[in-house]
Image (cartoon, rainbow, N blue to C red; front, side, top):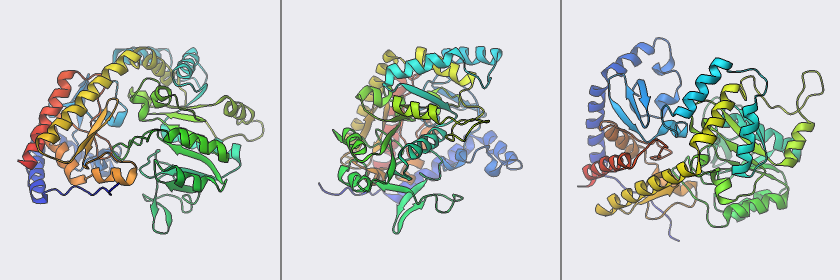
Length: 454
C-alpha cells in the first residue's frame, strides 16, 4: 500500500483568508477582547485554564450563556456548537434530566464522602450496558487512568505500560510522551525526569509490533482507546482489538480500554457495542454532562484484588486510589440521570444517523471540488481526512492535522455562527443537534472550501 503524503495547500491564499477572518472575528468580539485584557491582571494569559488559549490559535470569546446546541458570548454572538467542549458537553446545554438531578442533589447535599443509592444504580446500569461488572469513580479520566495503572502494576508486579502512537490518556507523566530518536521522551514541560522510562509506544493496528514488546513479559498494562480519537480518528482494523486482547492474555499483561471519548459514540461505548473483552474500561468527561467526574470499570478478579488491598487510615498501606471529591453525591446523581434519561439506545441511534448525514455531506463537498480527501465517520463523530484513504495509525492520522487549515476553518465558521472542532478532533454531533443544525454546518463548511479552492 503506497505511503500517504500531506496535502499541499496554497499557503498564500490560506494566510490571506485567515488574516481577513481574524480581523472580522476581533471586530465581532470586542467585549471579549476587553475582558481578556483585564483578566491578564489576575490570570496567566487572561484565562482561568491555559487550554482555553492553547486550544484556540485566536483569542477565545468569553461566554455568557447557552441552551441546547448553541452558546452565546458576551458580545451577543451565537455559536452552533460542534466542538461540545471536547466531548464534555455532548448532551447539549441545559438538558433537563441533568439540570433536575444537579439542582435536587445540591439541595440535598452535594458530597458526604459516603455512598448514596444512586451509586448502586449507576454501577448496575454500566455493568448491563458495557459488560464490565465493577466500577469506581474519580474526578477525571486522567485520574482514572492513573488508578488503573497503579492497580495493574501491583497485580502483575511489573512496571512498564504500552500506549499507541496517536494516543492521549490525560495529563499523566507516564503517557504525555512521544517516540523520539533516542527513545520515548516527554511531549511537554515540567514532567518528572525519568517518568517516561517505563512507557513503550507502538503503532496502532500493528499486532506484530505489539507482540514484540509484550514478549519481554515486563508490561503491566496495555492502555488504548478502542478507536484513536485525539489525532482526528483512527479505527481498528477488523480483528485488531481481539488480537490485542489475545496477546495481553498470552503474555500476562492487563488491558485497559480508555473510552473517555468513545463512550459518546455508541450505547454502552464501543466496548459494549462491539462486544470487546478487557480487564478495565475508563469513562470520562462527565459522560458528556458537563459535570466533572469519571469512572473506571474492572473485572471481578481485579475487583477482589482491590478489596484485598484497599487503603486504610489505621491499617497497612493499600493501593493508592481515591480522592476527597471522588464519587460525590452530585456526580453520582448526574451519572444516573444521564444513563437513564439521556444516553439511551434511541438517542444514540438518532445521533448516529446525524453523524452519517454530516459525513456524507462532507464527502459531497470534497467531491464537488475534486479534493482527494475522505470524511471520518464513527457514530456521531466526523471530520476532514486530508488524504485519499483513511489512516491506519497515528502517523498517518497526523497528516490531516494541518494547523493552518484547521485554524482558518474554525475562524471562518465562528464568524458565521458555528463553533468547529479543535485541532485533534473534528465536528461532533451532540444529543441536542437537529438535521437543520447538520445542514447549517455543511453549508458553511462548503462555503469555506469554496473560498480556498475556487
